Image 1 (tube, helix red, strand yellow):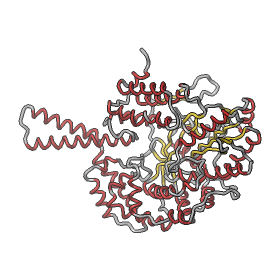
Image 2 (cartoon, one colour):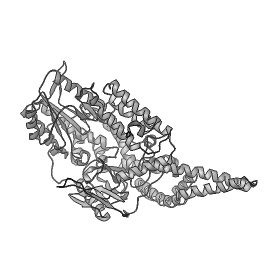
Image 3 (tube, helix red, strand yellow):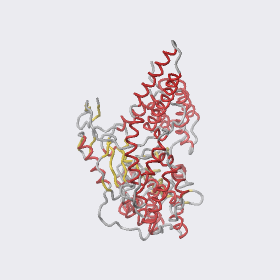
Image 4 (spheres, helix red, strand yellow):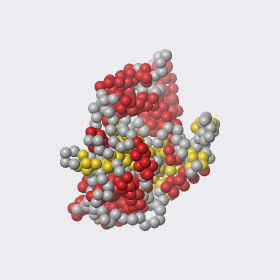
Length: 630
């Protein structure tokens, strides 16, 4: 039985749709489980297959075809070795119990003792396999120790499935429930979303950007070595959800001695030709709910699952790019760059607001919300920005191939829709995407700095040295500081409109906020009306932290306590043992206050409340923590 709420329209009640049916969403894609890698036959069988499979062609094609043959073999092999685990476990238990009963009356023969010993070994292995597979399905990467509890993993899987399951979805105002209609509607929605508008965008030719040196370009395109390739593979998580090919990096690590030649040849051929074999850059999009009880397709965040072949190339390029990008990106940007921290932007914003209040300056803060920022990026603008920053032609060719060769299928309840091409956007889940987005976002930094230098936009001067603070960026999270006057508001809107035209990134003014400091409410409402955004007030939440708040008040920290409560609500009835609770507290719960304490001093009363919740959760569980009274 399934239920979900529908729109209430003019009624004061929301209708609830109930359905009792089993839908066939189609075949599920192949996926390798880490438990397979531990089987004593796995390496021998795969190594033999790899050696006896002879493919002619260039490196990328050979690797792709060998992975394809391996996938076909593993589909059959895994059914034989790992199929019906529950039944195999019960058979082992019955065999052991029967022999134990017999042993209480008679002396067991040597053959029977050997049968019992083998049954015990098989039972132990089957239980470990089951636990490993359930753990991988549950996506609980934080629980590395402390709870070998398959029942816990079962509940985690069920809860994640219930949260992510889609039975009804509103697309373009139409509610879809039929399997084929829903899959087609989802595919068409994202195909349109990732299709670039065919018009020539304006350029930023009059704006200065930092440039790479000849030596830095040489570093970017230098020969990839086997050591660098191996180091990159070993740095990747072995259990992350695989892409369309179904292979995790755990497979490459386990089979490294047998597959390294094909992997290295694939990388070398890409470096030499700047081309990826067809199908190696195919990916899945999974839909992650942004909120509870999602109804519209806009309520989901598309995250890409990348295949191991392309992900290796992407990781190699991302590692190279990370070493040179710091000098290209302005200091206002604090995301994804070594040595720059999220907390930097929060502290600067908070200190700026404090000084504005103390000196009673008239100021506005515009918190911009970009509409699906990564999905809207124009590839042409990205290439233009790389050209302006001095990236060599070979590097730009590699990046173009990584973008243009990509194809996408959407997973709806675990089954793939039709495949389609994309022509804009950066895939969330691609290791390269964060760094490429920084290059795009630097365009906005350049526009604002140019406007400030020409006195077209006036930021806020702070400190004894009168440093001008005009904006702060953390990837697409952007806030503007400016003098509160009509000319400055118009300049801010012109800046955002210019960036939209050149890059494709559009401000969602309905979700953006304008806040005034030492400005009349009526005046700030007038400015907000001009921008078509919401008027707001301090404190504001920026990068998950309160900014402009009175840190001594307990009410400021109510959000932190509420997060604790929500976390514990999710773990209610999840069958955590004492060890599991300890791991949970240390790995998850403790990270919440530590994150805020990296910027602020938390009042002692709040710390005591947090500690009391953690103690009660450890010793009594959630119901004894804040559960219902009586």
